[in-house]
Length: 450
Image: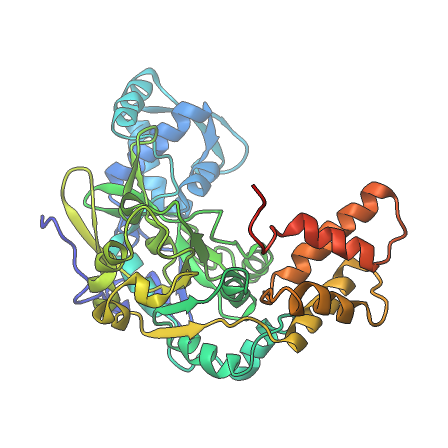
């Protein structure tokens, strides 16, 4: 077997009848056989014995649920284990082995311990890498998916600068790399996070994929939000509408900051389970991956971008197992970099050219600042007397030449509310409260006295 699996010729739907592709969606329908599922009987045997070893007893129906496969698909393996006295029937609550409770025999427990020495993976049964590659390609965001109206709806509660939609929209629509830069506190991260408000079609994500005989955990509850209600409604129409080794989710949004290291961008071995955790960019496939505080990671910007030059150019990435063998996987995420640094300090011209789109996030003007301030007052349900904000702007910005930042209204008002609550004052803003809030929030612009 080759040590590298490629994507150059992804499998067509006809090669696996369990994969059905609609005009605008991908739906992994339940396989009708282990061959269709791409799961060898030996692997099903391992999963059944390990589950029974830890759970004590389980019915045929429960075993099927644990493995994410229909019972008719795994029934032959259950019968094989019974015949070879590796499992024993304990009781039955209905007709057939699907309703029979099973437990490991003494020989079965010994065999399960041997399997657990290899890994402690219990299921659901893994999806072959081939099928995962195909699914990611079919669920990719296509150019033209986004409209101005969709973007405006997503940012309805945000105060954005002029020309924002005409600059931000094409980058998001393209799903190519984007660098958002500007002074700290102007909402760069906030803008990226607002993209989760865009109404887009859901995707299917496998719990685990298998490649080179190894298990790679893809689904992560931190980033993949299940659509439970929709799943339940689908199941009401037809039993097992889709392959339960996959889960239906919103498109993922992942964020990493200064903690990011090179090791986090490759397969991460989990010693306790003896399986691998997928790197962030793999979990972000068909979604968005935000690199926050770009330029402040332990690895340099050049090292980070060099790691992704090939994936960004080809849409494919190479990941390495502890054994040294490599596997090729799809790279289909919208990569956003957010930085407080001057782009020219991040790299040279050739480096910056690799970032397809660059968008500067400016300081707000006075009108935008006032709008943000009053909007946050409404959110806090606190009264701001007429004319008070004008006095604040004159005293704390015009006279001191302090620059506006989009975060200032939130930061100052939160401190003001803390003061009011601590001193049991009327829940209304005044000049004294805001002066003290500014004093507590900001360091002096003038040099400190020695």
